[in-house]
Amino acid sequence: MSRCDDMALVSLTFQGASEIVGSEDMGILVLTTTDEKWQVSVLCELVMINQVLMRNGHAQRMRDHLPEVLWSIIGAQKHEYQIEITDVANGKYFTQLVDKTALTRRDLRVSDAVLLAVISGMPLLIESAVLRKQAVPFDAKAHGVMVPANVVTEKMLRRALQQAIQQEDYEQADKLNKELKRRQQLDGGEPDAADDDTLHEG
Image 1 (cartoon, helix red, strand yellow):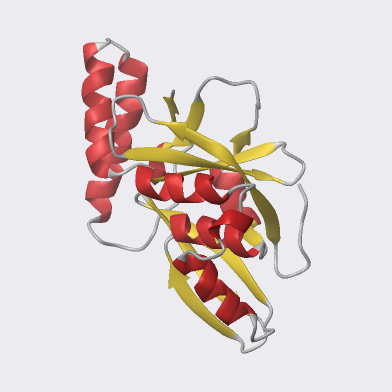
Image 2 (cartoon, rainbow, N blue to C red):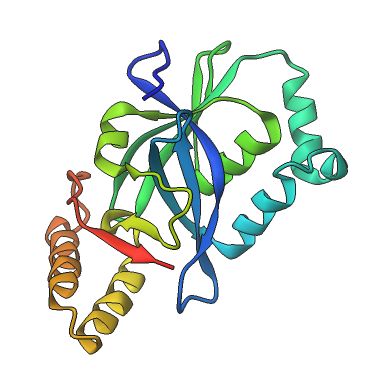
């Protein structure tokens, strides 16, 4: 894995996107380490996925759009920025925009962070401990995407549980049920370590 000097951070790049079978409004952003050995899956709205895909390789034609205009203003300040994914719990990645010049940090959604990284070219980094917890081997030829259960919304977990039961996939149903119970037990407590369970999406 390619490491950066700051803390134990690993560089990620946007690799592509995948649909979620049975979902009309959600999809998956696929991030990989720079050596393309490991993959991190980000669940987000299809509208955000479309925004990222519109810019991937087509930055010039998007230069008069609002995100690009705002970045041109911010980037003119000559500050050094990077994006850090620092934790994950209960369906959410914790992500920050770091201004290394002004020594400030601001929270932002992970899907917005990916969009900003694509627009600006700024480093998109993940703490190595989070990567070890979330990453699965990357296979460019794979037809589906493996998604850790801890980044799936509770609504989607319940829907996947129902489908697993209907398909008599009791092993998968047990994993989903355990994740749902784990979240219920937390009941708003501190972020907990994620299980190794993964869901398979087409």
